[in-house]
Length: 211
Image 1 (tube, rainbow, N blue to C red):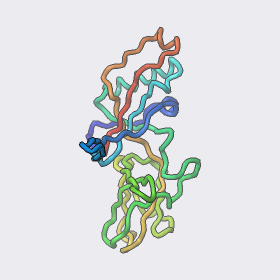
Image 2: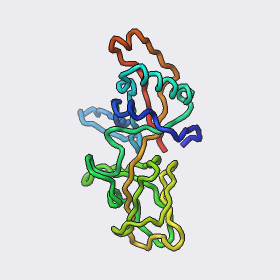
Image 3: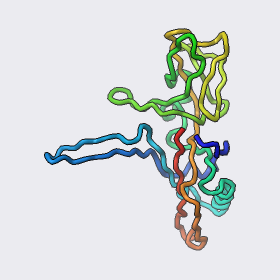
Image 4: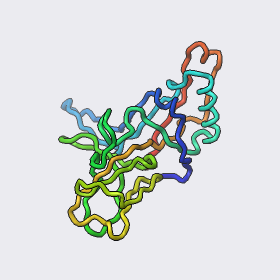
């Protein structure tokens, strides 16, 4: 990920009202027989959001404009809370150390990257989690919760100290809250205050920065 990133979260009251979700890129070719051939171009989905939906007051609009200016438009990335998908747990459930499997011990490897898995049976998707929320990460080894680890909240890497490295075959799991690394997908905010006061929604697109 580019170094041009600020470890600061987009205004939470605005992000909780935004719209958006994951995007994928797939080539679909129709053959002479009418059948389809489909090819996945991206290994990972990329999320897009429209922050304008979340702006309901002039104060919120002013805060977002200031945030945009400090990020220099598209230059600096930042953290964003996805209101639909921001924890390792199922919707409505609390974070638990057994939520997500993040690796299997081999007796030597001390570092494991946080991930979140979507789906179970046909083609589960494993998403890298690079921006866990500080203080939210819980870890278990073979089902037993441990505090003998550190987590890098800027990369999502969990590291066990010497003496606590998981043994061969041990299942490492984790629970966590996380933000999405994003940037503004525009260098221009074209805001008409008269239209805004009449109910128009300003266009403020955000796009995920993949790790």
